[in-house]
Image (cartoon, each protein chain N blue to C red):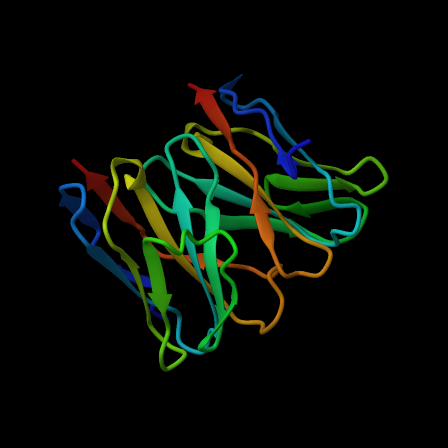
Length: 111
Length: 116
């Protein structure tokens, strides 16, 4: 099992719809979880982080964490063409000595 | 506040040649990371520095790669000799909390290396 797993996509959603991006991780001791957005040819930028079970909302973005299931997701409401990018899930190890990135899910928002 | 600075942005070299990348982190960030990113993949850590100390270099191919961060500020990553498989984007990132790899990392624009 990979340490951090994501579906590479592409995930295609129509403009205005909800995009749901998923990530599973193997280290049960991990305490924090990060979502980065990476536009083509650009470097990753942090858009959300979550530490506690449940939901965390920031504008059109909602991160959801379920530690028992080792599952973290990112919801993007009212998707816009400008949201088209690759979304990387990043999970630090329990000791915070190492951060592992997933392969990234490519999102395409169709106008 | 200036972001993470990397140079050069692009580099094309022939195999077996040496190459060096430079990174200047955000001022005050004591943790510096070098990542390698292949097309369609997530960033893979090469080395992490806490100030001038390399605290995680387990993924650095030490036969050809080397890195330094002599004064705990800017850093250089070197490849000698370069191989075709080294073609990738080399990302530098920094964060502000010592000893923890889990805090927000700010990435530089990256150096795209092409080895011919």
